[in-house]
Amino acid sequence: MTVVRPALTDLRSARLLLRAPSPELTEAVYAFQLRNLAHFSPWDPSYPPSYFEAASIQQALSQSAQAWADDQGYNYWLSLLDEPEKIIGKVQLSQVSRGPFQNAALGYKLDAAAQGQGLMREALQSVIQQAFAPDGIHLHRLQAAVRPENLRSLGLLRRLGFEDAGLQRRYLFIDGAWRDHQVFALINPAWPDRQAPG
Image (cartoon, rainbow, N blue to C red):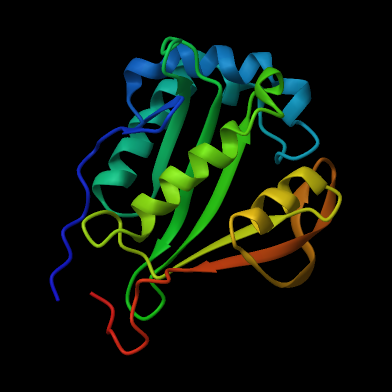
């Protein structure tokens, strides 16, 4: 079976524009990251100060676009449809593995001011649909790791149908210490059990 990988493209949901990475987003991503430094710091790894500079962000966006072209990762930057100049979140599919695994790691973050409106659920539904579509990224499985104290994120994954795959002790070094993470998995329901990877 020949799989056609998706071109660098955007997605749209009822309220959101989900954009593929591009250096043109540098200013909006820069503002998003600076605006949410304190909001994300308990959940993100430690970054050097240069990580948040415009030049570094532009380079990272270029690298993300290349990763997309190479079928290694798919990052989407979120904006409201009626406010496209402002980035309010990100959904990423990283560590794409083909062959017998056909899996990617799912990560996401949302602006502090956009919490509690169902926007991340809407974004994830769009990305999951694209991740599993035969004419999209076409993965068999998605995996997400969440710290046990992040109750909002745990609830979101469960509502989206992710199944608990177990607790991983000292999984990632976050916020100054090795942190436990709960791992969740979602299987593509349209992938037949006996269909070989493409």
